Image 1 (tube, rainbow, N blue to C red):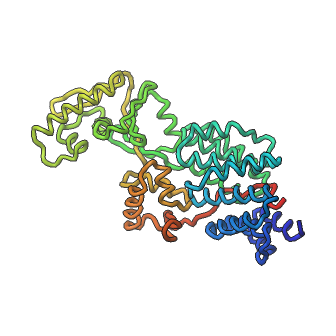
Image 2: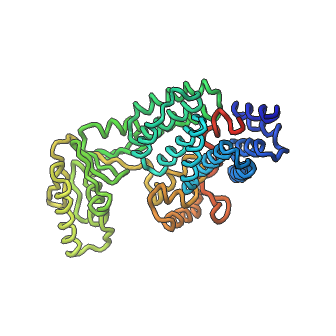
Image 3: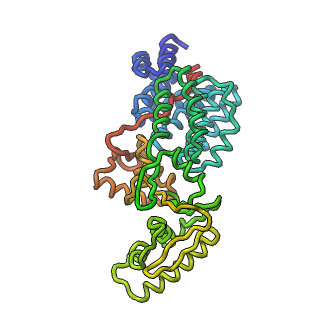
Amino acid sequence: MDSLITAAARALAAGDPLGALNRVALRDDAPALALRGIAMAQLGDLVRAKALMRSAARAFGPREAVARARCVVAEAEIALASRDLGWPTKALDAARVTLAKHGDRVNAAHAQYLAVRRLVLIGRLDEAERTLAELDPSSFPPASQAVHELIVAGIAMRRLRIKTASAALARAGRAAHLARIPALTAEVESAYVVLNTPAARLIANGEERLLVPREVEELLASRAFVVDACHNVVRGADTVVSLATRPVLFALARTLGEAWPGDVARDVLLARAFGAKFIDESHRARLRVEIGRLRKMLRGLADVRATARGFALEPRSAREVVVLALPVEEEYATVLALLTDGESWSSSALALALGASPRTIQRALGSLAAAGKVQWFGRGRARRWMTPPMPGFTTTLLLPAPLPID
C-alpha cells in the first residue's frame, strides 16, 4: 500500500472526506476508487459513490476476495443511506460470509449491522433483535460499538422502551467520543433529539396536548383505557384489541373515547363512522349493528351504553378514557413521518416500509408534492423523495476501521 492511499484512509477514518479526496481524486486504481466512493458517500453524493464502489469492486482482481467483499458492504451502506431497501441482501450476506472466513470480524459485523438496520426500517423488529443478539460489540472498535448501541436504541424507541433507549444512547455517545468521528457523534445527538420530540397527541376530557416518547410509554403502562389511533387498537387492563381491519368500529371507538365521559349523538357517530350526510332509518339500523359488534369486540374492557341521544363508552375497570393520536393527522401522514428522517427515499422503499402497494405510495407522493410538502430529484428508478430542504446524506462512517484497503 502506498503512502497516499494510507493517508487517504486515515483521513476517512478521522471523518475528513475532503482530505481523502485531495490525495486520491485523480487516481483510478482499485483502492483509490474505493476510497473515493466512501468519501463521496460521506459528502452526500450517493449516486456517484455507488458508481465508484461498483467500479472498485470490478477493479479488484478475483484473488482479492476480501477487498471485493468490503466494496459490496460499502455499496450496501450507500443503498441504506439512499433508502434503496430493495438492494439485494443476498450479496451482503455473501460478503459477510467472505469477510468472516478471512478473519475480518469488524467488517463482517458491520455487514450484519447494515442488515439489522434495514430490518428496523421495514418494521421487522423481532428479526432485527434476534440478529443483533448474535453480535457481541465488546471486542469491536468504538465506532462499531456506537453503531451497535444506536441500533439497540432505535429498536427500543420503536417498542417504546425509553429507559432502555436512553441507556443505549448514553453508551453510544461514549463510544462515538472515543471514535472521534463527527458523523457518528451527530447521529447520536440526532437520536437524543428524537427522545424529546413529540411523538403523539393525547385527547382527554375535551383537551389536547402533545406527548414525548417517555410520556407515551407511561400512558400505555397506566391503567387508563386507551383508544390508540396511532396503531388502530384499543388498550386496557393489559389487553390489546386490534381494530386495524375494522375501520368503522375503530371510528366509533375513537369518537366515543374523545367524548368520554359524555355521550355522542347518533347523527355525529353516523357522520364520523360512515361519512353519512343524509341520514335515514337504514343508517340508524346499520349503526345499531356496528355498535353491537363494537360491544362484542370490547367485551371485558368496556361497554357501550345507549343514552337518550346516542351512545356512551363505559370502561370496566379503568378510571379514565383517553385517545392517543398522531401529532399531526392528515392524509398520507405516515409517508411524511418516514420522510422527516432527513434521508431521500425511493417510492419502492416507502412501499416496503409501510406495507403498501407501490401505486398507493406513488399517488400519495404526487399529492404531497403538489401541496409542496415533499420534493424529488432524479428520474425513473433513480428518483428519490424527501421533505424540503433536507439533503440526503449517509448514516455512519462507511466501513469502520480496518478500511477496505487494509
